[in-house]
Image (cartoon, rainbow, N blue to C red; front, side, top):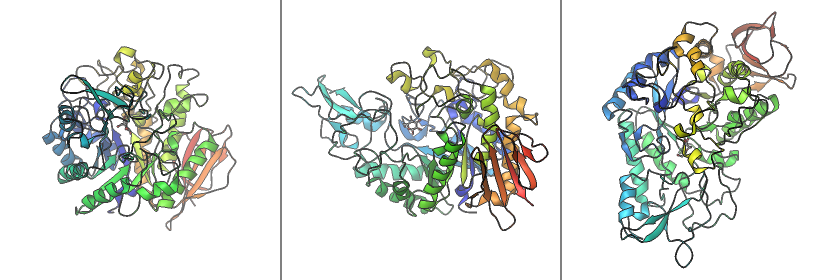
Length: 546
Ligand code: BGC
């Protein structure tokens, strides 16, 4: 199948925390290559590797200093090429992560801009502007950084005087690129070719609804600090601007110039399906994440609405939906489902979010959620460690925290480090098998029980559930089309059918407190065993109808 991304199961590798091959407490390409057999055994179709480029890691690698070089902490270009070849020989495709909205302040372009005068071509690659007021003491406009605080940083000019400001919608170390400059457009097309030539099968596009800005840089007049989501209007000065589509048409032409199909999956935060569909036109991106399932708690009305909305958005655009429960920005779903009630915002995790947390309940629900996710039409992205049932780590000491969200805030929002803690591979050793010399963030001691090697041999483990579910999914043709119909059920049960000429398959998820009678047929997968045809509460099953 050439359009493999339409129903693929993709495993997200946060490389810094996956596996450490060289004993420096940081994950790397060597560790990832060593663990390819694990991923093949799990049964994934592809991996998406978070940014692996040379970077000072001020934002976990989303601050790229050189898009054509591998971060020496992660390895070398030759190792990346070897990884791509080895993954391919195991039938696993490789999706890289492209960061086009901003570079690192250590990027050669930005360093040159700092050394160059206002109005120079070097500064025109970014958004440099004079400040307001007689001495330029006020920033050029009222935009806010997603990570907190103003979106403008004043520079000191080479002659030592206080100078212009530059725009950064994220951290101060992540200056925004000027996409109305053709040099920027050409540079990124060349970067895409660089990696496509090395065999990369696709790109996840970071902040895909960003990039273009209104060159007049008008005030927003409102304080949307912390919001990645574009409001439902097409005239926002820095989100979802029409000019961005020209960029993606250029990218698509690059991708389509290769024989073996290459793909783009966008991180595009838009509520309006009609606006989202514009990104998914046949000459733009192949798909974009449906983030709907990252939002609701374990609560039937919210989850049902999330599924309906994600399916509707994909249908509007004529693409297959691309689902995910968790990623490197979002609190892990074991913790979300273990909390008594909604207590979070997208990037926000406060120190108080531990209240009332029941991890056993969260893990039990996460088993059901795995079958929910993998029973939906379209493709599914798994975030590393969810197959082990890992929870959000809430008690990382402040002095070990790394996320700019924590440092730019008041200290109450702890940021995203809690979902980025290195994986436990073995029940013992200083870093639970992650590497030979510790882990860059501390792992909870009880993760020894969740280590991959411990779960591998245990039929009842989360890992075994995921492995079985992926194998069963692969073998069931009904799970590989985009067709889905709701079956009428009580409000706290989600029940849908995946029709297929070879016979339909039903997906059932019980989210209330009652048992639910499964439809007659063969139960090919269950998160918790049914008894006498009754699925217990908080469970999910796949039934091939007789
Ligand atoms: C990435 C984040 C990153 C931000 C800025 C997000 O979409 O997923 O991890 O901090 O973009 O690049």
